[in-house]
Amino acid sequence: MTRTRLTTVDDVPENGSYLFTVRERDGTEEEVVLVRCRDGESEITAWRNFCQHEIDQRLDRGFGAAVREGEIVCPKHGSMFDTCTGYCDNGKAAESYLSGVDVAVDGDVIYLTDSAVEFAHEGGIDDDDDGGPSSTSHLTF
Image 1 (cartoon, rainbow, N blue to C red):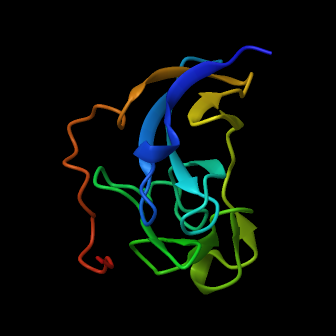
Image 2 (image 1 turned 30 degrees about the horizontal axis):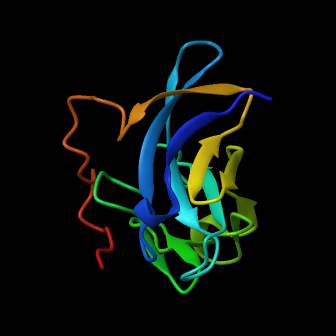
């Protein structure tokens, strides 16, 4: 198994996310967020950085995803995804799951272990967009 060092558990905020970019096999880039599975725990999960209701709606817009009581909150419609399973049971994304990326924690170090992608860089995809919402109906915490 190939693994790439990403960061440490300490770099993943208890109520936020750590953003990085991966390259898919076809060369396209995708943003991924690392979150703590439960508040204060060292178990880490990784999810592609988009809401299942609208794939162009980023959960982390460059300043951390909103994570409250073990759930990632979509900033547009307020759908909430479990940080451990990626499951959403409410709002416009109800009955859907976030798309996961395989990672492993060894001691305090987090590694990318997903064979379908390779690490591109820390942070989001560089684009001309300022990362802001296309509408004014976004939640902020």
